[in-house]
Image (cartoon, rainbow, N blue to C red; front, side, top):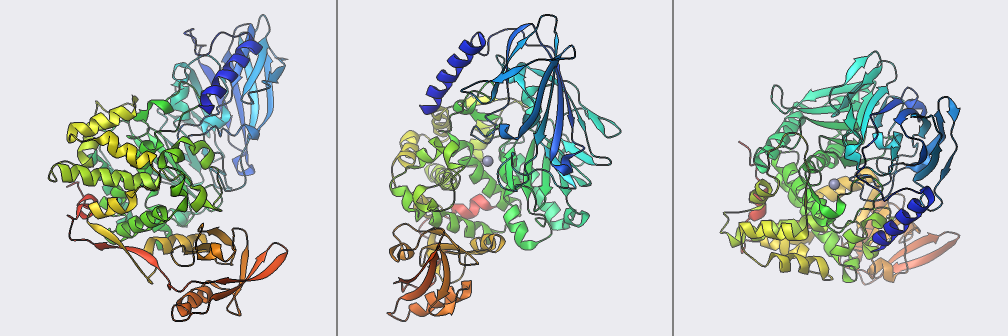
Length: 631
Ligand SMILES: [Zn+2]
């Protein structure tokens, strides 16, 4: 509703200001637009772009990409654009930004000008936080996202705009990309004409230390791991890990009935502690950025293992099949995020399933992660006021939320709770059909098609319900809407119980949570005192209404002492264990900015960490689901 209102307002203002017709008119698009990107100063955190755009005299509106596909929000990094200059026939052409739309530039093209020269720099982010606009370059590598270095004319679907891109790399750097037909001339790569849609969907990973691994050698389509790192040592991988990535490709074949909606697929893997860490899906590639030691450190590898499966699944779920509400003709029209519980939730589910089936995680690790997610989501007090659907509807805001009070605010829970929701769908399909149908059949049916070159087939909520009814007639609409719209539905517990497992707590840390805590240098005590804090005692989150909350503790405070001793994670854990056999509260000294005060947590339940235990009253569907499918 807010997006629609905003869109109508913006379009009418732009039309008035520019005297332009309604956007996306059926006019003939301008001829091919030349785009030259110079990345030779990428290590210095700056890119230069030069464009030559065929134009006609009169008013012209140019857009900088705002709604970035896969990021589900208007986070195009326009703040990092600098040195913008327009010229025609060698003479400068003035411009003015729209007063209400910071992503639109108004120009008046003089008579006699048929080619517009555009120059600007893109200031590469130095801080490592964020998504594709976060840090992408180091002294040794860069991930070039084309949306950051282009402008495009208003009024045409981006699939109808043709660009002729070239990219100049730092001397000697290698590259990987799904963009077809690259021709190397020294350090310049020329690409054949391509639609803006495909260009933006095909980033280029480049670096001095670069490794290419063919996962399906000699086969068509090919699957390539393109890895860039700050040192050659970080490019190493055990034969076992490499075998698991090969199995990942084989398992997607088995899951989706051998249908692949890409010509070739490139995993563009950036391994560096100095870039943003996230994954961004594309149709024929994925931008996967993680820790420098992701492939060579066991703990880091456990964390990294889910990234590629998730982003790979998006080629089918998100790129080929996409919610109609997320399908826009350009990067300017707002997207509606209401079906992200399918786009992201089902991808999270299938990604976890494939992580297990490919062997990247063993069964125990996969179950430990289910226990972690189910309890973290299940214990989130925010579920008492905010239904799952609203976490999707509000995603463009929630992606930028901080971690403090996350349990009460709720975050982008359509990933984790979405995973459990789709596990419950899988359980239910199996139960209704006497284990003859499952989400494996859904995947073959819903993502089927001719395959090959990227295609787009949109869907709505009703299409999901219809596809499930094809497999097993049931009130799927009611099933889904109850879990999406009611507050505090039993989804986490039910999904596990229907899958043959139940949650138990003991004082042994959850393996996956412990791994995540070690990497993030934090301590999770959610199910005992209701705290998540840094190893240094800084409070990250406090469970709303839990024991620490009742003791007056909040995010941003710092615990400095426990029962008269200097704070350390072990001191606090020991105090929690000791309080089990005592009626005395746990005594803390807590700093809150300038104030230092004593606090007491009255908790005597000991350390509690979640795990799964087999529940023999239900069939072990979870065991079946995680079992490898490919021969
Ligand atoms: Zn995703």
